[in-house]
Amino acid sequence: MVTLFEKWAKLSLVKRIICGLILGIIFALLIPNEVPFIAILGTLFVGLLKAIAPALVFFLVISAIAQHKAGEKTNMPSIIILYFIGTILAALVAVIASFIFPLAIQLSSAGVHNVTPPSGIIEVLKSLLMRIADNPVNALVNANYVGVLFWAILLGLAFRHTSDSTKIVLASFSDAVSKVVKWVINLAPLGVMGLVFGAISEKGLGALVGYGQLILLLVGCMLFIALVVNPTIALIMMRRNPYPLVFRCLEESGITAFFTRSSAANIPVNMNLCEKLNLDKDTYSVSIPLGATINMAGAAVTISVLTLAAVHTLGIQVDFITAIILSLLAAVSACGASGVAGGSLLLIPLACSLFGIPNDVAMEVVGVGFIIGVIQDSCETGLNSSTDVLFTAVAEYREWRKSGREIKIPKKFLKNIS
Image (tube, rainbow, N blue to C red; front, side):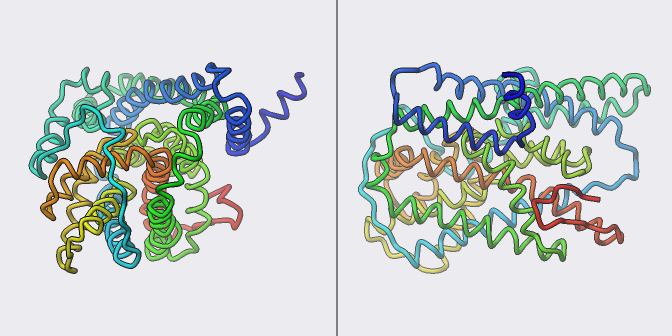
């Protein structure tokens, strides 16, 4: 038994997660409703990630800023630009694909209960500003990462003027929380097993057949962005083969985000991956939680595709200029989507309003989104979260290249970087 446990511990986390995935599928097909405890493992895992993530972000950002020396350069401006460019391009890809493969959908309000979409872009921006001005304790309790970042930055700037011993204490808190996060991440195989078991037991595989074409279009757009658009951006920035880095991000970040369906819950996983990639802690401790809030390429795809599906269903004529405006609106709206499961769906009525589609009809489109959410939202979150790490790494490697530092990216999944 001890030998078996040792062999299990020696496996990489990704291999252990794949084992959990396979077991979850097997249990769901054989005993779907007989062992509810398996599904609880998934809920518990996501709950632990969500619980520790705000504290991790809070202490990491405070410690990083407090110890940052004046004159030291960070890559945050480049990363924010990459986040915005990636989201815009994702929306454009979705619009073009929707024109090439126009789909009509069977509208149904199933799955929509007591939800209120924003009435306009002003409301989205106002909501974002109010999240920034949230009470710091409330921001931590409710996992409001915009508010957590804002107060952590302010406190970090204040602690820059304190003694070295105080900064050491802050660093110790940061290291302790990071250690707890690693313990939680090691529970991922059990968590994934529970999540897969719960999803298949509850929804079944047949519930998605009626929306197969829509799912294919959404997933196809996201795969194109992950495997073509993002690598092209990385190639331009790094002047190196980007695919080892792209695959590493998808492997270690995208897989866990796919199952947790929450960019916020995947923050600890991304922090851990950035550490493995030897990235600057001062940078990624800010860029990763920020990306979980504003880097929403997958959300831009979802908003654009489902909105244009409604347009085609109702027979509304759309010109090219309007489609471009939709791309921009989807990108801006996506930045206001929350980093939790289904956060982008309630922004669909905002995009639908551009075409004069009534709110009742738009909410039926949201209902379709909830029905296919087990796949759509999983792929969306996997793309969003893995891109957070990718763009953070790309911005830093670009600086390495400009300074003459060698970027070694081995062909097999980037095991070491020097």
